Length: 623
Image (cartoon, rainbow, N blue to C red; front, top):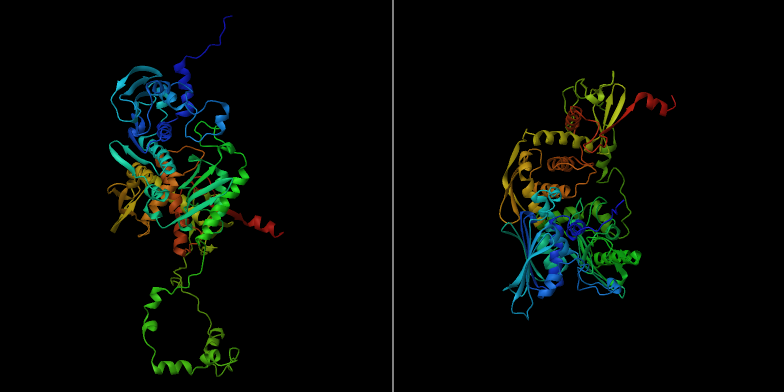
């Protein structure tokens, strides 16, 4: 039998290795930007075409490379940062393993121009499928210009796994933001298909955050800064009012390297305990400076997960730093003793007191009990007291209460209904049907109690409404467009760059669902109309919440873009617990719920109601 084990060719080995480092265009963007930072650049420009599938170009004014270094940089595990094993534990640069350029060259067509300040001519290299096609001197500026074209051109199966341009562009923006945040002293720009997305001037960390996250954070950031011998923590957290219902702007950096850490996120959440709702998430951008020997960053191909030598100490420092910052800047619930401006404008406050009104006030027994010495406890006899009319509220009137007429409506807007039976697929079990000759009852402003011929059911109002909205929006997205309510005064929404890309992707589907939104310049949209059931004046918040829920939509099943959008809108627009419903509103909701083909669960499988039968109730009471 011949031997069957053999060495892989270099180009195939490089393509396999590239699968760990270059998963999508955003992965290459991250590596190229970090290389530019390591080169000491103060100006870094990123240019992409077709979300990086056709072109990714990074231009920097760093120190550049010699001809030999430029050629060696594309070899696997060629690096200038590691010379012995101890260097692994003292890494302060972004890259160190020498995998990035070799991996990129294995799956794309790469061109590089680079020049050092002391050299007269630079070096041009063209590489395809890990093989050098051309290498020659060239005239270029000091620094490096690297172009990556036609990603995965030689691995078409992997190219087919890439998402839409809008989805891939969102990932590129995420990676760009993470690098730009970590180095506010460096100028960054991002241009996509000829349109500039970011233009970030060098400045302070707060200026960089406002440039990226939006001007609405300008007065809503709390400075965090704690220096110790073991580590330093600095950055910003958002005030409690900036908390969102989904995980939004949350960034951790360790030695200027972005990381993901559920453990440290828990420390920040604990610092905000009792200051924000339990289902809300605070905004934070926190930097941790620690001795490189105390961490291990070589545990994941993307280097976004690291290991700490002592996680508990880091956790305690982060939590204490955030708590101290919030307390120092008095970011805590407090009583507002300032007088409301509306009250100050009342006539009773502005009008000067006359002698007649003063005499009337000072002559009253109530006034005397407060101003005369030792009279605060005094209560006049009932027949003389000016407060005796309050007793009338507790005296029976002697008149019997009159029942309401069948067609009479109560003050609360509740109407008594004629005998009515509601049937639906979920309640057609023999003689078991829902009846409404008994009015519905709302319990704890969260549940609806409805009688049946065989007991009663308890309906969760939010989850029932979510099912109703999901069915309505599903019909709309599949051809039956929803009506749009035009806004008399259109509102303007300014979004971040990532949200702008997402909004442009969702605009056609949002229009089908009743939203009339139009682009209005860079990162700005005008809301001309919304679905008829959206409360006017709440359009901006509704759209922002929709984008947040869509971005952080979580499910074990991968849904299409339209399905995710419909589920997010249904979940967002459903009535929340705590909202009081009239009898008419409860009846409409129950009718629409049992008109559904699947009334017993929400789209994600959560029950909308629970059934209680008479025999079950009898057993509970021992009968």
